[in-house]
Length: 131
Image 1 (tube, rainbow, N blue to C red):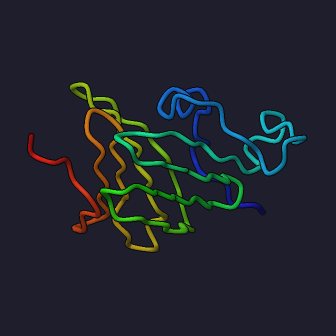
Image 2: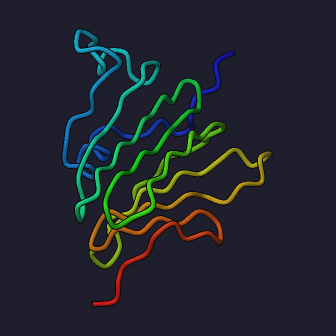
C-alpha cells in the first residue's frame, strides 16, 4: 500500500500561494494527469529570495530551497510529510508542512506574505526585519 499525504494538497491553492504553475520532473510530463503520484516543483521569488518547493504526495516527500543575499540559504529534504496546508489570516499567506505523528516533529511554517518568515518548531531560520 502506498502512503499518500492525507488529504492530498490542493494544486489550485498551491498555485495561488506560489503565484506560478509547478513543473514536473521533465518538460514532457503531464504533471496534472500524474497528480498525486508524480512530483512537482513550485518556484517563486519573494523579497529578493528565490524559493523552490518540491512536492511528491504519494511518497510523503517535500523539499524546500531558498537562495538570497540577505537570508540563510536552506535546503531541508522532508520525509514523512502527512499534510500540506495553506493558511490565510489577516493578510498573511503561509505554507504549513505537517509530519506524521509518529515522528514527533513540529510543523515547518513558511510565510510568503506580507514578510518572508521561516520557522520549524522553536527554530527561526529568518524572520521579518523590523522596518
